[in-house]
Length: 358
View 1: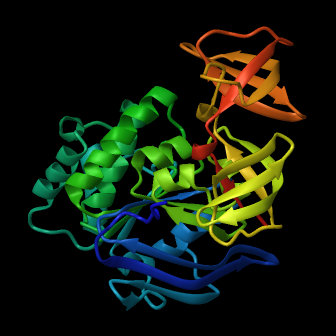
View 2 (view 1 turned 180 degrees about the vertical axis):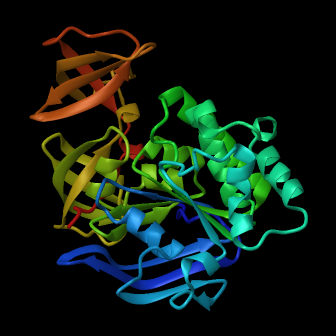
């Protein structure tokens, strides 16, 4: 089987080595190593309290690591105050000044530095980049949430930072607006040619935007890879459970041959691709995504289940069917009656056997 690797990216921009941050007796970031290439869109993904925002704040200089090394363009950041770092941040609240116009908000960071001769032209270019040049004389309360987010981005990029940090900037918007601005953000990042480090707990958002996704758990990096690898080859049961609407079936590896293993589960023995490091006798989980199950197939059905739930989702329904005490989820074009029997075909070759998270 072909080995999956992270995408080829640009030279290294930011490097973090062994970084630790504690708050009292709580360890927010527990000795992480993280690289951010130039021009990459890297997303820190994970549940609340996993440490992702603390990482962002340490890069910005708003928090100081207890130990470890952080370098930007190979320059140590420890002694560099926030205002002197070539880094800007877009916050969840946007943090626009309500008494300033859009033009004045965007120009604010340049004024703090004493101003520049072509400030008006720089403001115009920054607003052009986010398609807000015609709104320069308006105040924040006269803008929609999406427009305010664009202004916050313009204010962050006007100083031409080497790295732009974004802390859940779309979380306050409705689903339709989030989808629209995700497309705009990715296009903007490509136009600007600078690296973005983005924080979110929304996996769909992370996959839509990112070159590289870093999944965090309990202050540590659980997996770093491109979105496709994160989804199809999760490093452990935590990543598999956090990403997608999967069923995790506990079992034990019976035997392994190269990149494929057989796992003994309540569903029977299943042969599938396997994570590195697992060997015969190890506890493991079989990851089954909904798209790997179908109620229609050729030959004899792999499994037979009893429908326990049916959720209408528009063009399709999400069905939950119990097999040997395991609740399996799959999509179907037509709804099923609760309690009915359903044959299931499992595409085992696209499932995955991974380790149990510690």
